Length: 238
Image (cartoon, rainbow, N blue to C red; front, side, top):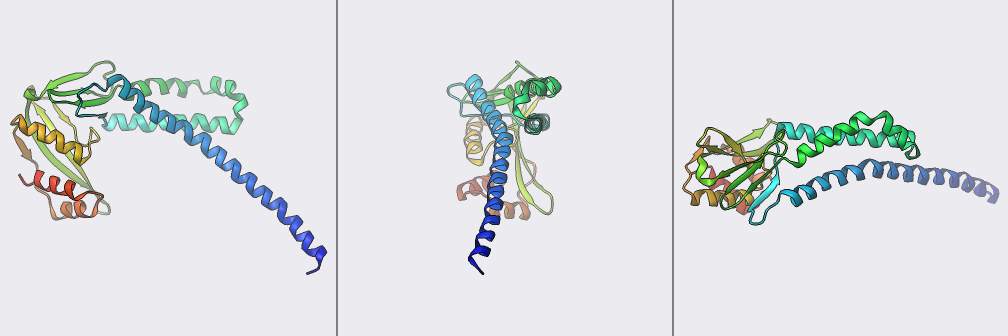
């Protein structure tokens, strides 16, 4: 290869490399514009919830999750991504026009955010405070003496992916109930502390069914510590 041919080849490579870096930079920028607002929205939800509702002396505090709140959370994320996509598509400089054209999804974000913010559970030595989805501004306070019994159960998901999901159902004397393990987002360590407190109040415990061989396998192969596996095994074999 002659010097002229080599120079010509390098000359063609430089624009291609420049286009590659430009495309990569554009892709990273677009990804940042899409992901960063969503991450900030989720984090601000946790920050504000902790700031407004987390009380001193709480053994456990977490956002409460059920079918309605999970659907609302996904919808909130989708609406945020939709608005960010419109900004990318039309240009950030046209944000006023984008706001005028897409005000409905932006307005819908406000009640979704507030309802999710107000959905939480708090457990302490005296009892539990629960604010459910769609009960904005209203919370239910229960004492441990109000609990009639506790029912413990689990599900394993489908046959292809045996995911162990536990249920710790507080059944109150007035007929109401509250599931705090899965709905409260508890890990085994948190549940162990809550369960110890419940047993100190001599609350009757009912096991829906003992651990099946598949459930034992799910505990052995899942991301559980030895202490967690021992606690769950003892919990379901009382």
